[in-house]
Image (tube, rainbow, N blue to C red; front, top):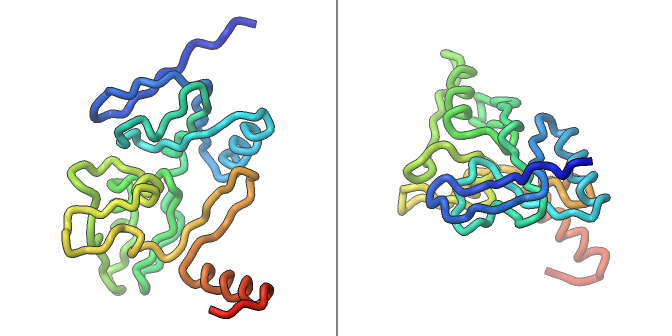
Length: 183
């Protein structure tokens, strides 16, 4: 069997982080994402997560490892117009998100907009925005996490953890009850 051609990745801004990776994983569905993570784990490999490759310093790459490119997971799944809540996949980029929810607006419901936006560029994934806890341009606005009600986190073992302020408090209360501690 012939060795595969090297895969080289780099950040799109500085171009100073050219990195050779073992494999580039590009799942297009949640099931394919879970399968990619589980297969890499079974093979004893390591994964770095990447979206649009804006991070500088090579944080989104792993020399000799696998890079999980989430841009194929880019669906806007649901828009609750009454509450202004969006459910999206991690690989959706800001322009897709904005166009998608605007197309879903109905004339007779509340109208929503984006309160704050990433800095300078707009081709960031929401997963990348969340992972960097981006803060946008507004100096008086809180970081992006303040606009997130909940998210699902795929763990290395293939299990999915749901993270929200309400569920973390519930988990803490359960832990305190089990250990006999008080808050």
